[in-house]
Length: 98
Image 1: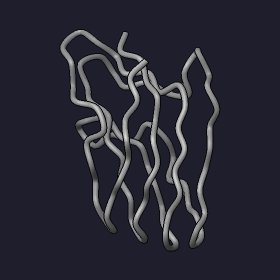
Image 2 (image 1 turned 45 degrees about the vertical axis):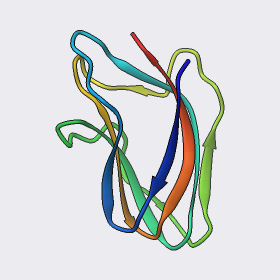
Image 3 (image 1 turned 135 degrees about the vertical axis):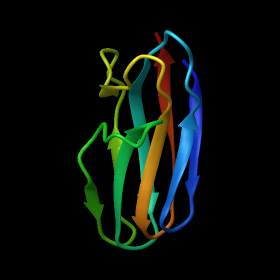
Image 4 (image 1 turned 30 degrees about the vertical axis):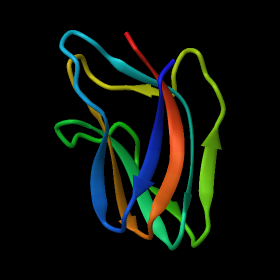
């Protein structure tokens, strides 16, 4: 299971996992912390939301422990991005490529 590191500056959208033909990216766990009030949304490589926007206060964060069924998936042949507005964010995620 690959592990990706997440380090994002304010108001940025960053590719976490590149698209792969005929594959789906399944996020099985993640954590992150934000430095200031922020909104975070996971997206596919086309910018379509995979989660709703998640709002956090300064020094807030989230942990989703391992879920072998996956918390969410990208559509086939799409990469995974994270969009952060507000403070900086840091963390990591575990994912499978199916």
